[in-house]
Length: 180
Image (cartoon, rainbow, N blue to C red):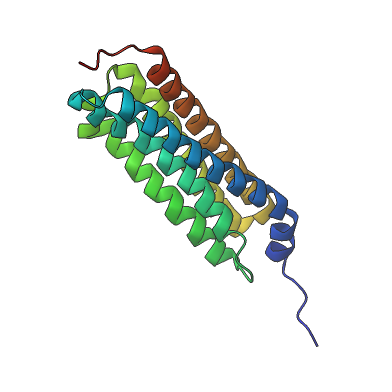
């Protein structure tokens, strides 16, 4: 006699297309982000200080894309229990909270051109990662509601990273640096 699927397995099957779309979007956008990095590095090849700052702006976006990709991949593992799904989500969410928090209160904040750059690169991602952690915790008690929080967190991370990548691309292509 086979075991009937538990509630979480059924819900994760219903969410499978969402995770597939999110992972495809995150993977594609990671590739495009590397194109932006390459363009920025080529434009500022002789401006060592400007080239060094590229990483400060890129890191939060890369981590956001990788987090979305990681959660999407982890949530498609078969035979998840509420505990294993919660651990996957909360661990990735907590890592993002630590990174965003360290940028906000740590030494990286001095590397940003303008103080207001911390909002899209640290504050907004921090809120999205907190949504992921909240979703993981809620998943233990109410899987349906928890998965909704996780989805909102993932979408938020993706939108924030797209906004930040677009701002970098515009900044790279619209500034004219003397390469001599």
